[in-house]
Each structure stands twice: as C-alpha cells, then as structure tokens.
Amino acid sequence: METVVEIEHLKKSFGTKEVLKDISLKIEKGENLVVLGKSGSGKSVLIKCLIGLLEPDEGKVVLLDKNVAELNAEDLNALRKKVGFLFQSAALYDSMTVRENLEFPLRDLKKKDQGEIDTLVLETLKSVGLEDAIDKMPSELSGGMRKRVGLARTLILKPEIILYDEPTTGLDPITSKEISQLILDVQKKYNAASIIITHDIECARITANRMIVIKEGECTAEGTFKELSESKDEWVNSFFK
Image 1: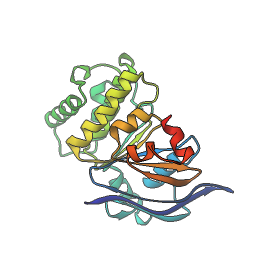
Image 2: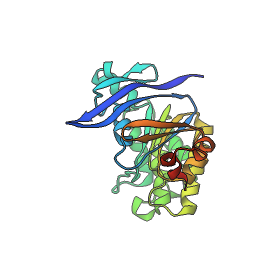
Image 3: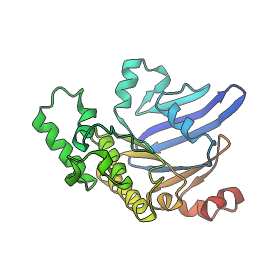
Image 4: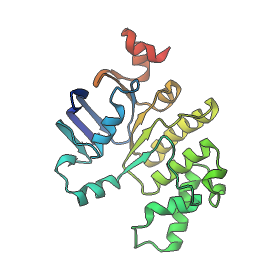
C-alpha cells in the first residue's frame, strides 16, 4: 500500500494550553479515515497542521512524500492543490452560479480552453448528481445540494487527498445518508485518501475504513467501526450510544 499521509508525534500548544499532545497516524491511498472527538479535542487543529496553516511545536507531517515543514510558500501551494477540502458550510461563492463556482479553481490552468473547462465542469457535476443545477445560484439550492456542489468544486482538480469537515452537519437524516454514500462513491471513483471529521455515527459507519478517537489532544483508540463500537472503554463507547 502507498502511504499518502504520515504524522509522527505531532504536538501543538497555544500558550499554556496543549491542544495536540502526541498524535501519530498513517493513511494509505484510497483509505477513508474517520476522526471522532468532542468539540475542543484538537480535530480542527490537526487538519490545519496537516496542510501547513499551523506550524507544529514538535513532530513531523508528510503529505504525498513531502515534509510540509520544509516546503517554501510556492511548493506548499502546489501541494495544497493536491488536497481537496469540503468545508462544513460548503463555502460557495453566493454571487456566482454553480458553473462559476466550479470554474473558479480552474482559473490558473491556462492550458485549458473554455470547451475543456465546460466539459470538466459538467462531468464533475454529473459525478455528484447535480448537472441540472449548473446555472443555478447557491441561494436556489437546498443544504444537501450545496454540499454536493462544494464536493464537486473540491473534486474538479482531482485531489489525491480529501479533507471533510463535518460533511453532514445541519442536514436531515435522509440527506445525511445520501452525502455519506456520496463520500463512499467518490472514494471508489477517484481512489483518493480521505480524512472525515464527524460527530455523525451513521456517517462514520457508512464511510470509514478505519477510525481514530481523539480525546484531549491524544489518540485514545483506533480500529474499524465494528471494533470501536464494541470497545470496553466507556468514553469511546459513548460515541456509539
């Protein structure tokens, strides 16, 4: 298996508050890793360290064989283009149509003519089942549709790693299940590695190949959904009740 993410003994504090105390993990190509943890446990800080938005106090982060801490600004930006991020809010540009939102990440790809861009936008929207929404404004879309468009915008650059931040937050149970299934479909189609931060146990059940649980900045448990759901650890087990 090809390792695409490797984190070794990651530590990060803000003042006297230790947020990440000692995190180590690996993710293989094509693997979905779900990260569980209560608010304030360090999940978001982990993601920010992963893509170089925060500098760790100690430890090493390697993405796609690149040591993030050793990259200059240009190389770091090039690496980030290989990492897709689905924001909790979908983070669409409200003044742009769906088509324009998807075209936006392609603006630096000067080798592509408009015909190629049109084809790529349509194909990517089809992959999330929203080709008919191509000329709609974000305000005309439901919450689930906005998430799908956000995912399409993430996929259009064909990332090798995808970071999902609470992908089902604010959605009804049926739409949440659809988005979770879509994450699984994306995994199969694009063979990208994914980190999925979620509190939604059903989302975790559907999407996870492997899971970790973070408690107060430390990884307290790791395993499959079945293994963790049967954990004898009362705190770990509380997520599954």
